[in-house]
Structure formats: structure tokens, C-alpha cells
Amino acid sequence: MPHVYAMRIHADTDRGDLDCPYEIRSTISCCLKATRSERPTPFSMDDRMRRVISRRVRCSPQLAILAVVLSFTHQAATQKVESIPIPGTKAFPESITSTSDGALFVGRLGDGGIVRVKPRPAESIVFIQPGASGSRSILGVFADEASSTLWACSNDLSALGGSAAGSDTWSALKSFDLNTGDAKHSFSPPGSHAFCNDITVDAKASVYVTDTANPTILKLSAGATTFDVFAQDSAFSAPQSGGAGLDGIAFGSDGNLYVTTYAAGELLRVEVKHGRARRVTKLSGNRHLQFPDALRSLGDNSFLLIEGSGRLDRVVIRGDAFAVTPIHDGFVTPTSVAQIGTTAWVSEGQLAFFFDPSKRNLSPSLPFRIYAVPSKKEDSK
Image (cartoon, rainbow, N blue to C red; front, top):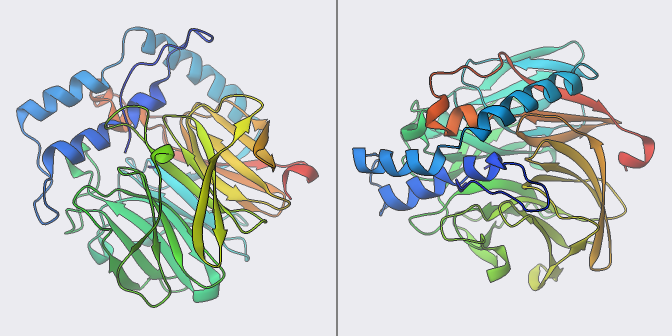
């Protein structure tokens, strides 16, 4: 994701290619800020707004060439790994989480709802129905087994063709029973332009959410009904107004919080002391990240990281620096990852078919799938 996402053709002088993931992901921010001034107002879009979005989302003819290249790359990559289909012709899987019994939960951006997958045998069902608890498009999901809660970020993307089954016209953090799927609570982030994206939970059952439309990490303490701003920093901002800022979030083994910024391609550490945020540090890497998305903690201050450009990585942090090692490449807009044993499960979003108006009459590769990537021993801890 998932999750406010800026549309701009970005031609890097070093690479000479076209980065459409950045383009894909800024449309949401544009829509949210231009069409919704107050939370209770329905998400509507007039002709003027559609023209603005069309201009922002439309890629050059180079995109067609890139799409063909990515298609062949995708086929070559995915032939080597096991996959499981995700139900829904408009699923557009955005986030994935796992439990200790080997179950996977996948949020659907297009169809809404959450799918539960059991890899052995390969079975998938719609566990949380579209519209449950007022939900719309589901972005970040997080399974908290300690509280038997499945957390989910819901955002109204109905104007872009996302789920309209629910009643919410604003961003919300939803909680469901992890065993039954029954709805528990719904929490609204502060402000009229919030965008709940990704989620993590600490040992005290406090929930942390990245607000991609604002440079803030939000915290919902255990038992609380309203969010606090846990950390706010200009380093969390997108490089241009309306772009995609904060995205992935996870705790490291050092007890600090780590986040990614999608458009800027940064990995940052938020120092945590006595439950409070302290210094924010932008970490330096052995290479620049290309649209870093989901972040999942392993051990020894290492993480699995998704890059929206098509890659699953292992990231190891030492001091104020990090080293990136690619694990698997060739995915079409991967969005998230979850670890089960020595297998990393990657959700492939194919998000250009959701956000790019020029592709509305084209079909993504169906069915949507999640892919099992076997990990080396050093990549799974």
C-alpha cells in the first residue's frame, strides 16, 4: 500500500526507466485532499477532479513498453515459486499478515474484506466480508494473537473503483476477532485527511499506525478509544505535496520503531524510550530503496522489506546504516510480505490496473495471487 499515493512519472537519470509505482500511489492523496474537507462528507468526484486524476495517473507510451517487460519478468520470476490464488476479480491484495498456526490474512483494496488463506492445503476464504463494520478498501492488516485481534486499515476509495459495500466515508482502524471474524471496534484517526496505511503492535497491546497523508505515526494505547500522535517529523513527509509519505512500520529487536517512506525511498528509525518517541534518524543504505513498502521484523535487527518496484529484500540494520540483500525480484507491484517458518509470502497488487484510468478497461492477470518465496536460513531470522 498501501497504501496515499502520488502519481508522477519519475525518470531517474541513473536508471532511465519509468517508475509507475510512485505514480500509482499518489492518486489517493490527490483524491482525499481535493474531495473531502470534513470526515462525514461522502467521497465524491466531479468531472474536474476526474480530469485532474487522469492527468496525474496517465503514463507515457513508455509505460506500455515497461508493462510488457514487467509481464515477462513476472512470468519468469513466479514460475519458480509456489502461489495461491486470492478470490475476487477486483481483489488487488494490499497487505498480508500471518499467525503462528500458519494462517495468512490478506486485505483486499478493490473488493474489500479480508481473505484467510491456509497454505497446507492451499485454501482461501473471505474471512471478513466486504463492508463489515462499515469498512471500505482494506489496506494494512496485522494479526495480534496476544489479544486475539485482527487489525485492519480501511479507507474509502470507492471513487477509484474500490469497495463501496461499507458505510464509512473516512479512514478508520478496524478490529475483528482473530478466530471468528466478528467485528470489535472502529477507531477514526485524527484530522479530516488521515489515511490509515500500515500497522504494528507492541508488547503492551498498543497499536501503531502510519498516516500516509500526514507526517505522523499514530498510537492507540490498549483500552483507549482515541489516537495519540506518537511521532511527528518532517522526515516522514513525501518529497512533494500530496505524495506518498509514511508506509511500512515494524518494531526492531532493539525496541525501536522503524518506518518506510514510499515516494522518498527512505528507511527511518524512531528511538523509543519508556514508551515515548525520541529522536528520528534517517538511515543510510548501501543503495537507494525504490518505493519501500511493507516492513516485517525478523531478528537481530533485520527485516523483510517489500519494494514496490518489484522486489522482496532482507534488510539488516547496524547503527545508523542498513544493508539490503535482494531475495526475489520480478513481482508486479508487490505490496506486502508475511513470514511463516522459512517461507516469505508476498502479496502482488498489480495496482496499475486499479489506479491508472487508462487501464480501467484492461484486465489484470487473474486470479490475483500471493507467492511463497523460500528463504535462506540467514534471510529468515
